[in-house]
Length: 132
Image (tube, rainbow, N blue to C red; front, side, top):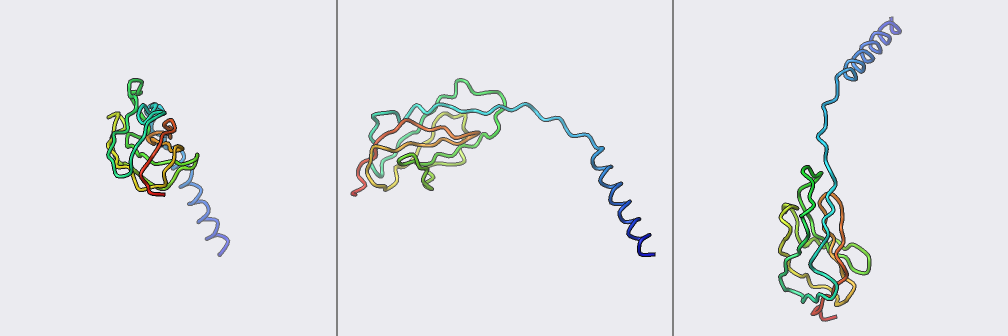
């Protein structure tokens, strides 16, 4: 009796699996990864702690369908992305977002990472006024 019940349960499970598998997948829209180059800050730029600046990127080659349209800007120092989020939740197709320079150690090895579909780094720039 137990083997009959186990067999019946297995048969029901198998038929459920096959019926789910037989449902056709919905077609996906073609989407492209958008990697806009960061225009500002650029090499030679100097930012001061506490100042506000616009991060600017080129949207002229944006595809019609992008994977993720919401952007995030993070700070990098010495080729390491820090946990500092300078901006988030903005439309990546706007081409700019205003950020406030955080209190950080002074240096000329900073970059910004622009995330939308993918991460894109700005050129290295300088942050001054951190007091260290």
